[in-house]
Length: 116
Image 1 (cartoon, rainbow, N blue to C red):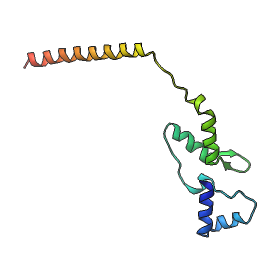
Image 2 (image 1 turned 30 degrees about the vertical axis):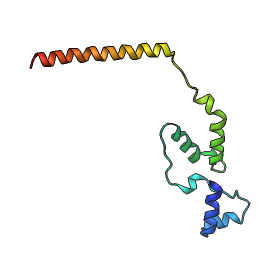
Image 3 (image 1 turned 90 degrees about the vertical axis):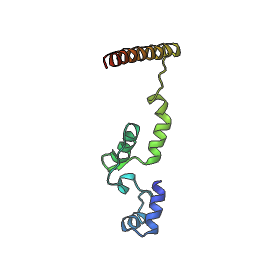
């Protein structure tokens, strides 16, 4: 993505990108250079932070999108482990909630219609 943005900037003759093209700087643009605000909720906020916050205090470079994708591919299963509940216990909870809701509905209905 960053390489495509760099090529687009060269085609449009953006001065900063043309200057960068003449140096030994990487031929790609960081997301924080393209956007003034990067936000998200839950997992997207982690992605936004890694794209916006410097990874190196000396150069003020952020992570590139490919670095973030590689990180999530490598560590995602460890970070987002699924927890499961016993299916028998789940059915008991569902049935109890259903009976409780039905009983409360019966009591409320009896009260409302008996007093009308």
